[in-house]
Image 1 (cartoon, helix red, strand yellow):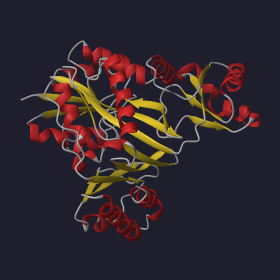
Image 2: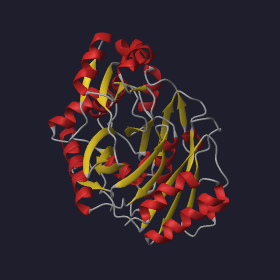
Image 3: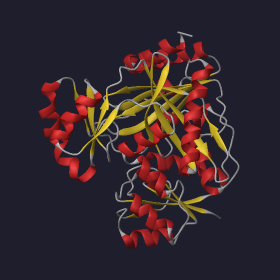
Image 4: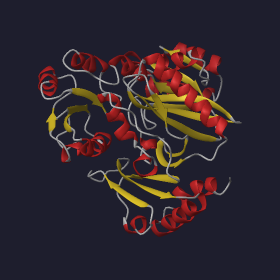
Length: 381
């Protein structure tokens, strides 16, 4: 029986474990936290990602390794790769961990991106803003996610405050200025590439965020087919250049019908959770198929699906489970402000049926503001 090791023990690892059970897989998870929620579903080794003894103990118990967290140190993944196969590769992980390297690769591949510039000092910040233009966003090159490590610069008066907020991180994680994009809609393309080079992508997903954290995802996005093809073409070019193995997401802004790449997530992705019930093969199963060298599963949508993210605390499950296409996912985490604790997916065979179900759930849970943009998108076809 094959044992898969997962670096990181959050909800993504937990869902990988659940997807792997029908495939007859075993799992071992390494995470610094003793209460990592994947440990409720698989053996958990508690240790730091840079702990040589913990990595050696982990490697001794597995046949292949992957990760659920893009901030796993790439050097740790490289050390592990000397003892067991690691997919995606540590080099792909390292690229996605640095916004400057990532954006530069996008540009090299002909994938449109917002203007950007490296920032190494306070004077360099002034020069970068002059080059990129206002408004713009100062971000850490490394370790930022879910809106963390960012400062929006609206005018020149914000420059000192931006540097005060993030400047001390420049020597450790680097900084980058990116042009602010007044986008019409955010999208993501979730894709998978196998060890044999085979490539598949799920339908383009429309996303809505609140305070930098994903709130809702709708798939398939209500867009012209040409936009989906363009997004999938960008994703394929990226996967092939990196010789990528596994699932990843390419996050995109759409402005006046044109796509701009925001960032790549080198792992299964929050905006792909709808695939568990809403696609022929989930992102989690296909990730495991990819890293094990198995044939990839079909990625076609099964009707229409919407994922609602639960942040801070779980609401009442009743209204979701009362729907014929309602599915509930509790990550087994303690409630905490800003924490992703679970999600729900509603699926229906046609767009209007999904819109009606979402409206009922939103009203019952007091989440009208969360569901309304999705309902509007479904009804604007």
